[in-house]
Length: 313
Ligand code: HSE
Image (cartoon, rainbow, N blue to C red; front, side, top):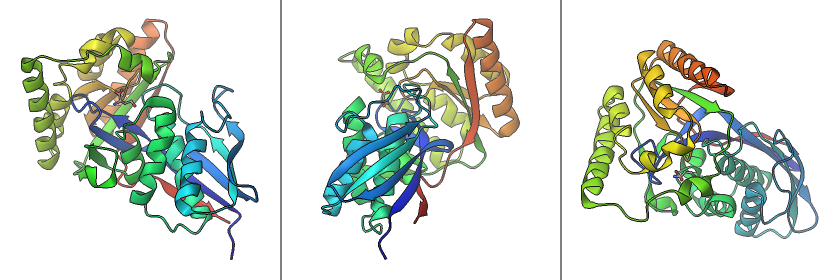
C-alpha cells in the first residue's frame, strides 16, 4: 500500500542548559510543531501552507528549515517523487525554544513516515541538521534532543557524537517567553571570540558538575551548575529584558535556578515539582507585566521521547 499523507510532531527544546553552550539540550513534552507531508509526482519538497506564524516564515525552498530538511530526507530516501508540506507552527519564532529545529525535525520524520519509515532517527539526523543550518548555523543542540528526546550531550553533528544523559525524576520546567524577538544570529554575534583560562576552567567545571548532578538525580545541584555559566549569559544579558529581576522572582517563588533558553529571550526556571514551577512562572510573568512587556508562560516536563509520527494515511 502506498501512503499518501503523513503527519509528525516535534517538540520545543531548551538548548545550552546554561553552562553547556552549544553542547547540551533537552526536549520538552510540549509545545511542538506539526508538519504534514503529502506525496506529489514531481521531485522535491514544496510548502503549500504555513499556519500559526503570522506570515513571517518564508515559503522559498532554500530558506525554510522544514523544506530543506524534507528535501534532504527525500535525497536520503533516494526517491524520485516529491512532497508538499503543510506546517502548523505552535512554537513562537526567534524565542529560544528551538522553533526552527522543531519544524525541520517534524518535516524529516513526516517525509520518512510517508515512504514507510525506512530510515532510523539517527539516519535522519543529517537532514534535520541541514534544515536547521538553513536558518541558524550548523549546530545540533536543538535538533538532537528534538529528534531523540531526553537530555542530550551534543559533541558534533553526527549521530555517534550525541549522547543521552539521564533525566532526573520530578524535574519540572517553567518557560516564560517575553514578547520580544531575539534572532539567534544576533545573539551569537554578541559572544566573545575567545575566553580566558580562568573562565575556561570555571565553565568546564560547571558543565562537569551539571553532568554529575544529572547522574545523581540532584535537581538543586543541577540548577546551580546550569547557572554556573560565566561566558554566554554575561554577553547576552543585555538582550534579555528583566533577566536579573525575573530570576530573583522565580527563585523567591521556589525555582532552583533560571537560565536563558537557547539564544533567548525565553527564560527556563528549573523546579522540583509542579507547584514550584507554576509559582515560578507566575512570578516571572509578574516581573514582565510590571515592565510593560507581555509574556507567555508554559509549565512542562522533559520529554523522554522526541519527535513522533502522528498519523500515516
Ligand atoms: N546554542 C545555541 C545558542 C542555541 O545559544 O546560540 C540556539 O540555536
